Picture 1 (spheres, rainbow, N blue to C red):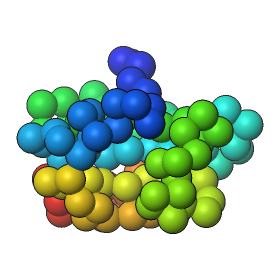
Picture 2: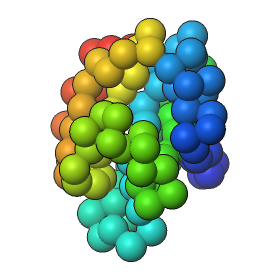
Picture 3: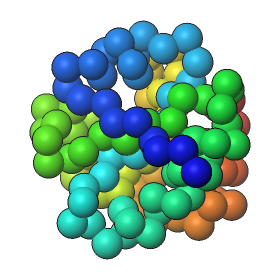
Length: 107
């Protein structure tokens, strides 16, 4: 399984907001238990949606300004960005089928 790339405050605009394809961002942290539970699902989607959706992670501890900008109060938070705008937002662990049903409508 391919490693999901990380974005930072420095490249968030370029990698996420300016992307020509939808971008799913997993806001996560290494110490977060539910984040570890959702990580394999995010990795699967990264592989399955290759070419249709860019899937990236954003470390919550290292990028607090991004979290503040989008009002993220809890992690994991997974957001789908389309055309530079938030199209969908899910907070907390979700099973793969629920996550896919919410996110895939924006592909």
